[in-house]
Amino acid sequence: MVRLLPDEGIHSKSQGEGLPRPDCDRTLESAIGEFRGFLPADGTGDGDEDSKDYSEYFREFESQAQRIGAVFDGLEPTHLGGREHDLTYDDLTGTVLKFTKPSAAAYVVNFDFDRPSLSTGLPLQYLERQALHNEIFADSITFVGIGGERHRRRIITRQKRVDGGPARWEPIVRLMVENLGFTKLRHNHGIGYEDSYAFVREDVAVFDLRPANVIETESGLLVPIDSIPVRLTEETRRMLR
Image (cartoon, rainbow, N blue to C red; front, side, top):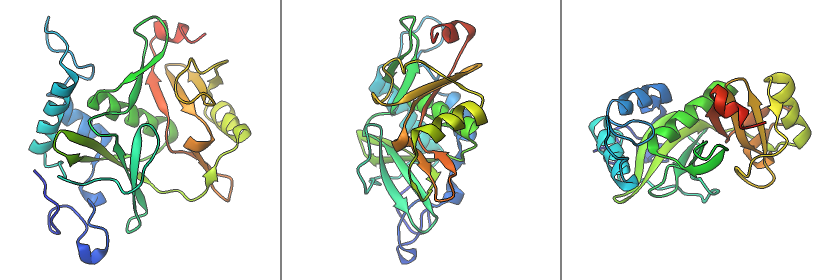
């Protein structure tokens, strides 16, 4: 287990923050590969085994994080966020640490009832969601580890800090449709906030895009900082019509 000590993967107190160092982060692809050998993404076991209990799955995720040295005991966010994350701003590196809510792995989209719906994510599903966000928006979210208190663990990722304000609707739609080749869906299927938009492109859909989740810089550059993307099959894509 990683302790919050100056010489064990964190900024020393003399450097200001006492936070995990970026050079100790893992890429999401690397973290997913390490966890996938122990935990299937959907929480099911091999063969005919029943799905794991959510808390059991989270404990096994934590155990693997301990094995790879990615548990930061007692590390908590300093700022309250939205429904999925709380935050710590790392001014030393110009990044933001994003903490999932305690004992949770945010949300993912599933199609269990022949329509898209929001469900509580499993830890590996959450990492895969973030990796897909990276792929779509050329972002560089990394996996930091697990923080929080025992029995109230939080998954921690790192994202570059971008200065600006909430984007306007018109540039958001233009970014998605004209620049990234998506089609705007007629409605968001009740996923995310009521005012959010949803978009679809070939084998991927992106939900919960709205001004609060897209930063517009002074130069007019749009940077999506949070979204709920999902891979689509031919069958699930038809459900979005």
